[in-house]
Length: 148
Image 1 (spheres, helix red, strand yellow):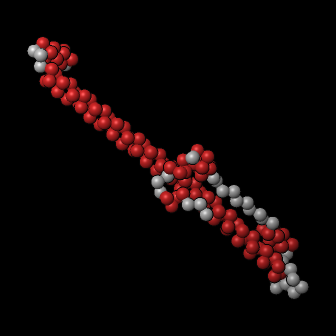
Image 2 (image 1 turned 90 degrees about the vertical axis):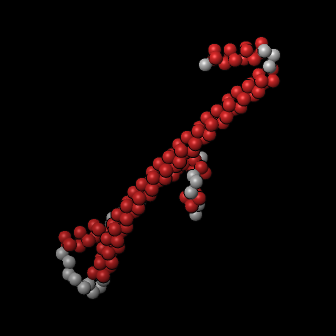
Image 3 (image 1 turned 90 degrees about the horizontal axis):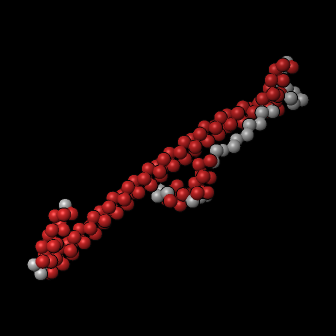
């Protein structure tokens, strides 16, 4: 292809047809510029696609982390409710006039339930990672950026 183009250029220059040569050169420059613009557009499209994929992956990870936190918190709440029930049972049955007579073993098992002190520590790895990396501001969903 290059030999073919070189021959055309040499023929145009030998025939002193410089205006045709300049038209040809301008056309070639325009084709190169159009090609570069097409490549840049494809590159931008690909980068946007990658960013959207990464954002979707990050939001899914956040959702999984929040779901795990909710599950853990729910189990802690169940334990706390059991502890509260045991405490109210102990209070009712250790007054001056208890409503039930409990054996030592039964009282011991109820008291054991009252000393339960579950602790909940939420998982924040993904959220802290987003904040520290500065990628939190790159999320396109504005509702996910609101801090309360």
